[in-house]
Image 1 (tube, rainbow, N blue to C red):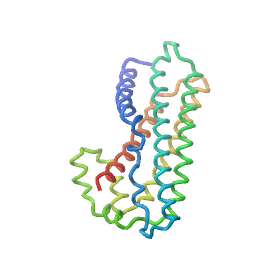
Image 2 (cartoon, one colour):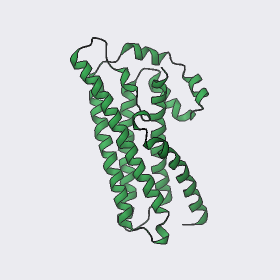
Image 3 (tube, one colour):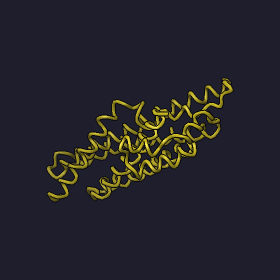
Length: 222
């Protein structure tokens, strides 16, 4: 690995390390959390109460699996820095990616269940109305949020489309499973994966993480 490539790789790791440090100990707050309040039509039926509770549980569980997977991927990237020094083996790197994949597959299964339940549970009309009237532009400016990612968040929430948010998160996890498998296949063939593939993997994680965080921030400020 050339000096410039190694330097770029280290810069990425520093950024991702910060994200993981603040997120690993805060699973209940960082990935679409709070969005469960958008469910519950107000008839206080037992079935509806059970469904809204289950939605909240799926959200927390999915966030935990997602962040665990990201954490394992960060460790893989850190250890990959030592690859040329031969102080880390292919098997060790593959094992880390296996763990990352296992957690992301659990996240995907969780989000499949979340989507199924969300589509059969009525929205809370009060929350939906609050989402439609939320000052998204002012909120973005106040918190200096990434404009491209927040535009995606706004596109869903300004229409009260919480189900669309869950569908996107499910698709994100499926994409990450594919990217993780691609990197892992290179290592299993005895070849260190091209940096562009690891960068693409990191970008997919970070963009999805910010999307989920911004969702949580909006719901936390309704």
